[in-house]
Image (tube, rainbow, N blue to C red; front, side):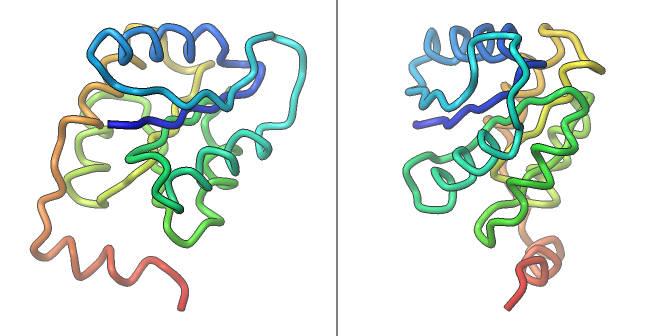
Length: 143
């Protein structure tokens, strides 16, 4: 499975820990994030990950910025992307179960690395429930 990951200056240590964790589990990582704490623009990385998910280059995406909001807003501009801001494991599970989210957005300034890794594991291993949720998810994209 291929995972696209992108981050701004708030998340290089998160990206590194998540990527190493996923690679050890056999995932292929596509890295669009910065490796430094020098200020950069989160939309550049959110759009790169969203493009990978939207065009099928990656199965899922992981995006990281300070609050998780800006990068999620950027990714959600793509019609084929449902990026969910997650700050706890239960939200990550619900994002998959109820929203069929295909990108997880992590707020680096409001979670720790251990939480982030756990949320990513939950996100990647939780299935969409479909049913009544599918009707709602099908109404999300603009036509």
